[in-house]
Every structure is written in C-alpha cells, then in structure tokens.
Length: 346
Image (cartoon, rainbow, N blue to C red):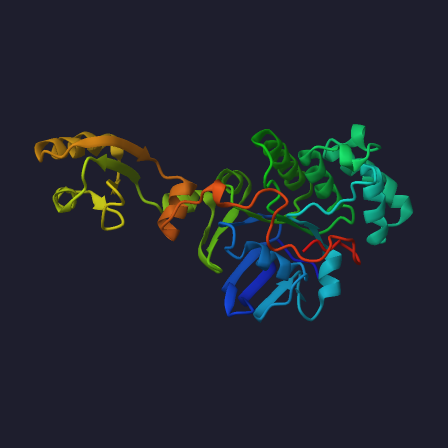
C-alpha cells in the first residue's frame, strides 16, 4: 500500500504500553508521519522513545491503541510491516568476527535480496557510508563510528520505504556524529525516504528533522517544526543570579512592565525572566535591581532555541549527561543474535 505525499505514512492513535508494575512507558500517544519527511522523537532517557519505535517496528506489542505503517497494522500484520521498513537499533548488532562486507552479505540473505542485486547494492551502500576501503577488514577492528555507519548501511540493504533510527549517534564523538548526520541528509536528498529517528541530542533534532515531537514520561507534549517550536518560546530568557533571592527580589521583578517571572520563584538564588527583547530591557532590569539594593552576581541570556523550547514544555533542561553510555541501554533483552529478517537486539 503506497502513500501519496499528502497521506500519512505512519499513523499512531492513542498508543499505550504498560509494563509490569503499572509502568506506563507510552501513554496515549497519537501522531502521524508524512511521506518523505524526517520525523524526530526528542526526549530524555526513559521518555518512551525506544518503546514507541519498538512497537512501530513490531519488536514489541502495544498494550492499547493502534499503529499502522504504510497502512499495515503493526499488531495484526507484522510480517507486512517488516518488509517495508529498515531499522538501525541503539545497540550494535553486527558481527565482530565477520568483515564489513560479510555482514552486509549476511543481511542481504536474511532479507532475501536476490544475489544478482545484492552485490550492486552492497557496493553502493558501502560507498554511501564511506566504508568501501574497509569492507574486507574484520568489524572488530572498526571504530565505533564505522560500526554505526555499517549498521546504517545494513538497514538499507532491502531498500525500505521507511527507515527507523533509534538514537543513531548515541555515545559518538561530535566529529563522528556530524558524519552520520551528513549520511542521513544525503539519504533524504537522494531517495526522499521517510525517516523516523529518536534522539536526546538537541542539535541533532534541530538540524535533521522536518518535525519534532517532544516526548516526556511517555506523553507527547509538543509537536511541530523546529522553527515553530523555537518561536513558541516567545522571547528571550534572562537568568539573573543574586546574592540572596527573597520576596523583595520577586516583588521587584513582578512590578517591572513587560517582564514575566518564570517558575514563579527563584531556583537557588537564580530568577528566570522572560522578555520580548533582552537588548531593549536588560539595562532597565539591572538598574531596577541596583535601585532596590539587590546585589547581582551574574546574568545570562538565552535566545529562543530548541533547548529553551524543551525547557518551557517540560520544566527542565535536556542534558546529555543524563543519558546511558554507548552500548549500555537498559532496554536491551535477549542475546543480540540475528533472528528472522532484521536482527533482534533488545
């Protein structure tokens, strides 16, 4: 069933996943993904990103709700879904004791790619991810970035219509992450493939995605284009640290025209203030503090950003250091062996 540019290629309605102990990993989630777009799930570890992608790729059954991929119900028609999708999982599942090319050949056989086509596709994909020179080396000699690029190539061997990328650059250094981003952009430009990715990297979501769903505690709390999410913040945020933040400081802020006190209180000795334009009002704010004998320790300004949008919607910042290190995802189950078409690593 082929989608048109106007039709959603993925449809999710009131999706739920409840684990033992009444843990709601996915809580009444609804969204659609358009054909040819890069759609992102942005959220911290434990937000429900991997659980959602596991349901959409038929690795996990939902507790409630419905999800379709290219018109196929993920619960009732898992076999049909698997034929039209590719998956690059969080955890590495390639075989270290095989060469890069041997891994690709094995994946081609698992997907029943005709041998006459497999060689050409493998050659093309190894060139795409810049591993053609290293294709005959044992994978155990590859760097982490090379292994992730090989996983990306394997996810494309059967020419899927939709590619799922679960934290595609988790734990990689910034240079390698940038290289992976370039490959994803090139893939989108050359094939117009629909790509669904999960990430906790703000710059990754901002730079790659056509639309982003901010997900936290299993719920989607905002969904729009990166630019619209940033515009929704509505102004600059000034963070003022004072020597001692008491009621007098809060009263001064609340009586300033055109200024909004965020959080309704100080956090520590810091107050966050939203203003339309910090360039216009910052001097006036500082003068008010001086006139009221309030000692200012430091001042910081945040222009509207995806980071700020996440903070506004969730009430907290998305910090990379909160995430699990590469290869240590808590969602992994099983032994990482290949089973059926795409290997099951969790």
